[in-house]
Length: 85
Image 1 (cartoon, rainbow, N blue to C red):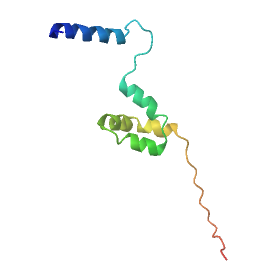
Image 2 (image 1 turned 90 degrees about the horizontal axis):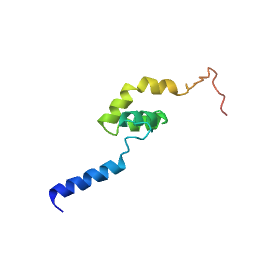
Image 3 (image 1 turned 90 degrees about the vertical axis):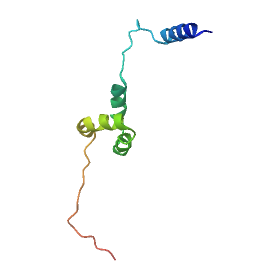
Image 4 (image 1 turned 180 degrees about the vertical axis):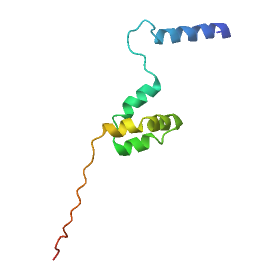
């Protein structure tokens, strides 16, 4: 196959995989990562932000939104000293 034929073949392959008439939503990578991030726990969120620069940027710019979506943790501190025998 010549170089020109090879280029035409690759263009046909790409056009078969992308259907521009499709009504499905076109998601960008940051939007998909944000959806994934919002389902993570706190520890996984920290790991998420350490993957690469793009993921860290997404995590840092949406940190407040993420933290507000989590349940608040209640901590109860007892003022009584337990008697141990």
